Length: 264
Ligand SMILES: Nc1ncnc2c1ncn2[C@@H]1O[C@H](COP(=O)(O)OP(=O)(O)OP(=O)(O)O)[C@@H](O)[C@H]1O
Ligand SMILES: [Mg+2]
Image (cartoon, rainbow, N blue to C red):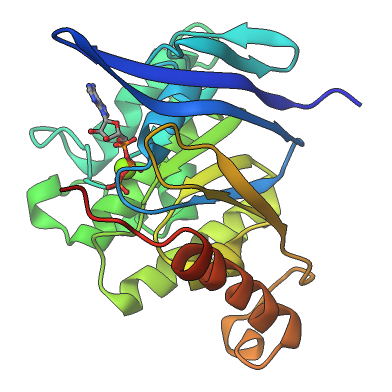
């Protein structure tokens, strides 16, 4: 079977002055269509670098990314990114932030009316239709993050790339947004790569959890299958033995096998 999305022997080094830092070494992973993958690992190990390589924002030093059989090495609407810090344009309304992306991707394909309806549809998906005329400064952090997700979804990407999308949010807002993303994933079947530091979030949302070793020259230390059936309900999972087992495996990886070593 050929993978839908293939990370193929990715190495990444950054050169500065006369010295080179090896950040990633031999990162390979086959991802199936519709799979929800989380990437977890200590700060600085190279998770964002890996996501940026998949997004086409950073070139790999060796190896590469293959999506549906074709190599991707520049940004494209088939791979939408949601960053941790909300990246909305502050001078545009919520609606116009989404509309800008929709116009860019669909201007030759959908009519004006269709594009309008499509923006509203995606804002409704994240329950932000009511705030369509507000500016980013007038809405909360969680709401901004919802709009960022709506904007990414509206591009109908083959792959959704999430870099700690809920990292800056309080626990309750975070839980609401995780539930929304689970529902969206269930109904649309997107292929997702999500970086997170949160073990519970990784176990709740993922089909597989990719655990990175510490850098330099970080690689995939282990990949954990998360077997609980969907739909998953967070309160029921708290006592589910399969959930607890996954949680333990990730915690052990992070805190026993690959303890965080603060750079000197
Ligand atoms: N443009 C760059 N030039 C030089 N070094 C870089 C560059 N981008 C990242 N690095 C280095 O690569 C390493 C990995 O960075 P990266 O941002 O991918 O880590 P991360 O795993 O996402 O960390 P965090 O969890 O803190 O977000 C770090 O040591 C960082 O200093
Ligand atoms: Mg990062």
